Image 1 (cartoon, one colour):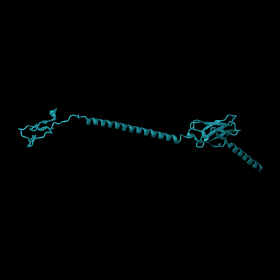
Image 2 (cartoon, rainbow, N blue to C red; image 1 turned 120 degrees about the horizontal axis):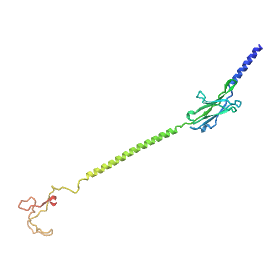
Image 3 (spheres, one colour; image 1 turned 90 degrees about the vertical axis):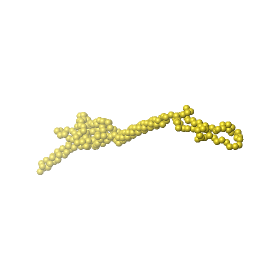
Amino acid sequence: MPSRNASLRFLFLVAGSLAALSHAPMPLAYLATAAEDIRTGDSISICCTAPSTYLGSWFDLLRTDVAEPLQSQQAPHNQYNVTFMLGSVTAGDSGHYYCRYRYVNGTALVTSNPSNMVEILVPGPGWFLPMALSVAGAVLLALVLLAVVVTKQVKARRQQIRRDQDSCWTETGFPTTELSFDNGVFVGPVKSDREGMGSPGTCLPPGPQKRLTSATSTSSQEMPEFSTFKALE
């Protein structure tokens, strides 16, 4: 009976030792650069530090959304920390990172518990740049359309002025000084049989006066004089 209790005690000690060996103390992870200073294209340093007794351990860098380690490296035999570098980060590198270390205990490979989470947030171009590009494109398109409209209006205005000028020259193309009076007949002054009627101030003697000869008198009387503009030419 005592031997049986000793065997059970030994088994419990071995199991406890294996459990302790299978879960080494967690390391410490931290950023060497302030998180708020990270920009697209920067290089980020993530430090991972194990307890000082675990020299020369292997360290893994992991991200919560990736199953396999992103990077792995071994610390020098006299050191217990490493630094992981992420170069030219983009918005796709944003996430929660952590590390762990592994060491050899005899013939067994022991893996530590995961470290604390380190959040990396890489800002993308954001909404300002696409909106600015959209506004610039819209303004450029509006300017092009405005230039086309103004050009068409100026061209139409010039054509209208040219047509108006041509119309004015057509209307004033005939000679304004040539007037035809071929059918114009003017009756000259009617002569009386008595040309010596005197001046307007002369008194005529009493008695019947002779009639003035009209253009409709008989042929024996003196015919009136006719003149036309053709004759004056």
